[in-house]
Image (cartoon, rainbow over all chains, first blue to last red):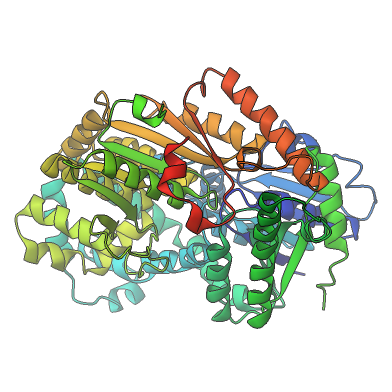
Length: 344
Length: 278
């Protein structure tokens, strides 16, 4: 059986990592084997999961007895790291070239900008393992739901069409007929000559080395194109877009809502973290300033909720946990998750 | 009287912070302030289109303020084509190149490249118009990527005209009183730690004179708030705010560079006057 996929998206600082971890805990406690893939959990999260020695890119079984308390299910976690994923790709395809390319080495550094694309590849490699009931992916920070989906197109573009022109121009001995057939009008030679003008001969060499090394492992990348369908398939993928009542970004949530409507998958939820609705609505302020504060905080929550309801978008509100203790927060949030009846 | 004014004027103010902390609002206010104080200089507020997809329309377009001609949104395609045209001395060929699939693919696969292009454009505006620029830059993960991209592409190109341009850019950015970073954040312990980490990581790539810390959305700073009449969670929030604020003031990284901003119940009331009163 292939795993079910749950993807958490949202801008940084809204509680994406906390909510996805709580979700993984809740699913594990219900008897599922789960893999949590996350990019950069804070140190306190590492402490809680008792995986403080975790090395990037490796899968660790979470040792916290509060989570893995049954014999039949366990939670595993991986800190995704682009360089380790690159290594795994090289091992899988038996091509060392990828690891020797200077270009690829620079670009697969933590801030090289390829996080989303490699997260897709990593996700697919784990999905193919068929080891878990659920894979929970906490997407790279900063990215938007749409950015993440666009990564599929970037991979397609790179391997499917444009670079073929270059390969054909330079690699005439290529025996791959199907590639040759796809050649459109090739401006590759002219392009490279301009490129050389603003860069250097050496750059072109390094560049082509990188392109070739990627071409060698293209099968693994091309497989990830199946996310296109799998992401829209509600039997496979469930989406959680995370927002936060306490941040001044209602526009962000409304924007998420827009991008959701055109997306076919029905298993999509907006998660709104940190609701203080109850505390606020029972508060009876005595002064004008306090009254204004109450109105402002309350209307923020109401505005978001009513807009989502109007547009019949499924959303889940999470109560704000007033604590600095990460264990307490995660425990409480995972209980809040367990009350959600998402399973069809 | 005015804390911001104490700092010597720089050419480029980069505002950064995580999503949803009010970065855009704060940078806009700062822009108005600088503009008002420098009537003889050109002052621009610049936003960049961060969608890495080359052809994507800017889906979160900046609401243009009616009477403001100096708020600019930079688009990747325009900036890149302009740069290329300068390098190969032909607008026509440059726009042909930027329309090829090959080129679009490279730019969208290498997100760092767009930062490079934006930096180039911004430095050019400063140079040509002696302008002061307030840059509402992408959220902090991206900010680091922005500086690292300069370093990465320096290593990638090694020699040649683009390499020379990158070196020049770094030289300009490292000039005294040229670049100032302004980090906008809300006050939470975790954000504090990340800010320290961000600053540490940045120092690897760029010499930053001074970082201004705008702490936004503080309940404890709301004028005339009756603190004895609040729901429990706000009482706790305020006491943890005060705690963290004190910690920051004692920390030499933040000391003297902190600008607390109260939580504002109505954005419309969030006037320049209040901002100046900081």
